[in-house]
Image (cartoon, rainbow, N blue to C red):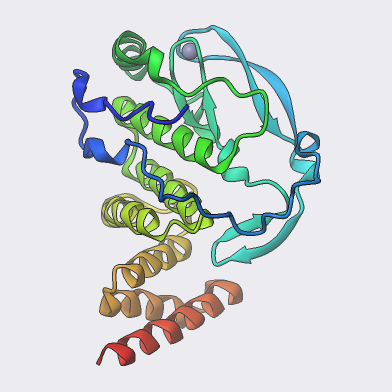
Length: 268
Ligand SMILES: [Zn+2]
């Protein structure tokens, strides 16, 4: 299962992100995920298997789909909801096992003729043997990361918006954070930050469904992670003074500002 995208550089693909992004990167020994007390829980109650038709190759395939009605949110980790027993991020990707097309499920049906041709020419020809396995069962955190990376590869071939690239990288970073894999979290957060910064400058809001307030907070969080405290504080101040944003987002910004100011003080 793991290592499927490790040899990408051997394939005739021209990608505008480094090949290392797609390779297997997990800290060893694997650390335990947060809230992992689910040994006795029957995970199968949370999903069912559903059949879809691929918009690229028209083949039918089936995959695990979460039962939204069963999900119980426990709390928010900044902008990310944390659920009991399952991590929905692992189920965010739709993957056709016939042609290898993979994408965030909200974008599954959005494919132009040109994108379709590019996917068939590049993925099916070069790559079909390397795709993640079909899933009719629980998708764990590591598999979730592999599926998101595989979808990022499709996204580059499909030439999606910068906002969509940023979203995929952010979700990969978050999964590493959930695994408490700090090194890889920071690695992917850096790329997510670069893509989101480009989208912030060049795309109009909402950026891939994210409001200006949400994007600004993410940029502040990534800047804080990179220890670029002055940039983080600039974005956070924009949020705090903006009365049009929700109280929750402004409270989050105040909390992060306090943290950043503390970090900066400690460094001096
Ligand atoms: Zn297909």
